[in-house]
Image (cartoon, rainbow, N blue to C red; front, side):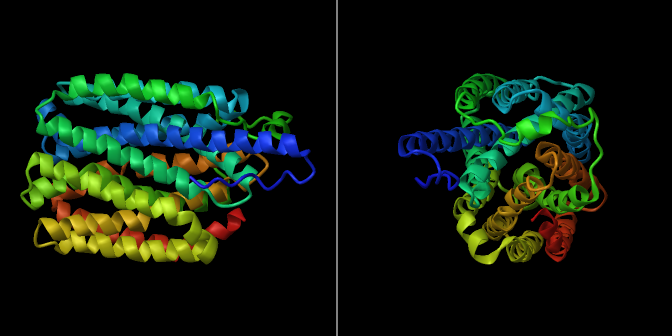
Length: 400
């Protein structure tokens, strides 16, 4: 992580400036850990979807319907998150939401019926959405202190978390470990790491300004938030479809083994993480709108390659390109939302609700389309969405 310091400290005494810079760098590292923990939970779950489907006894249509539940849970929870961000300090909010999200991982391996799995996934989606809002609000606060684009690197650590979680699940699957044991151990370790990191985050500098005019308990998005959120929705739709369905796609469409199929999530997350870790330089050079347009073209190409893939190598390459294409869009979406006043946390919550709440239905939609046609046709739909995302990139200017 670059050793740069915040730019807004010219009038501060030298010793105070140095101390402030150290605090902000520490906060940046702590925020990166929180993002990584969040991603690790998702990656661990995604790579174990085939195990969960077999454990409950669901076909493609059944698991697709069940995977609608995280999106519904997030859609119910996210409209309340702006008020939570106003009422509670970010440090406390992050610590609580990330711990509860980690704990929800255990629930996903317990159900033996479709109904119980749906309940577990509702809780998983709701806690994921609340934790996501809190950590992105923190990311925006730290980026403001730096005075330059750093959100992409935070999301890069989220992708590294996906990579680590999916790799752990692949190893556990290969070794025959029961997912219930794996998830129980992981949830304890990850919750502990998240709680320690949360102690070093900074509070949102806009909190005092927001205190005089608290947002409503339940808030619908404004027009700028809605437009930016729809771009995010297209991106998250593709991102989560790739995360949740890549393993099953390789296993059922291209004949990969369960352990090899789990590596699809790892390959997808690895390219996404690499793109995000260098993405801030790209964003500073090209600007947000051209970056999103280029990203959409890359993601559409990857989805089309998945559709026409004759074998495993081509399928993996397609998911890799899809990962690169969606990598930088969500960081730009949240950065734009954080510039919409007078309640940046509310704007972030609104965008997160649209993007993640709507996008989390992607696995269910993919499953529904697949049950009527095929998984191949489902990824053709993703290619079309990526073209639409590229064409709509101009709305990110409204966040400037």
